[in-house]
Length: 304
Image (tube, rainbow, N blue to C red; front, side):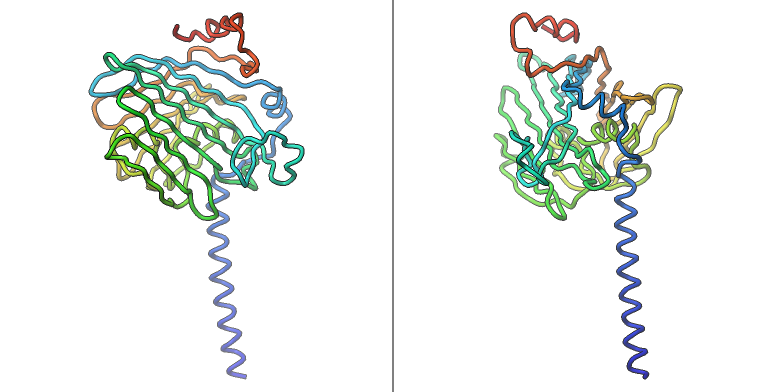
């Protein structure tokens, strides 16, 4: 009888520990998942066959000076392969491998002296955050006259597999696994999907690949605190990193469709990078390739 009670006690303890572990994992995922089912308003806007194109005035800190430039944010939903982590050519045949993602292409351009910078980031976040709470893929390419780099994150079972290829010795060609955490690049896609809401308090986050390259910081999951303040029309989020001298703010509309109004990046060098919304339109840009379509660039107030 004593042996039976001891065994039963051990089983109870193991079960309790397992349940507590499961509850903690569930709580962590709940803090970043979608707060409500997708609405008719969301579906009509994001599945209309158009992308949302927004232009921003850019003031970019680089080499101790502020450089004028511009940013374009392209938000669009796409069918995506979970296994291959690429856009599906024939989603109807993909079955359960087909998932809808919110894609963000961020195109940032500015000039330093005689030469140009062009930075493109692409982020793919599942629309159904309840069942797929983590961004599946994100990559960034940085091109300038000295050379270029390419960095990509792919979601695995328990980590992000990161690959980086670079012209520069300090970066080199790198491949490693990083524990799953929020990506700084995915904060904007989450805001668009999740009714302008981000998890608050201390979170694990992998900082921007642009910050990593510009300040020679090795990419890792690190602690940051997310806080917010609200005005009548806008929610301002502040992301303050604990170990790094980096603070990011994002201003987002309170009302649907929760457009990004502006953002700043303060890296402790006395200068602040800032992007401010100029114009936003919805267009099927992939079909607008003719010279007559260049009028859309004027509508977006893009630089020549």
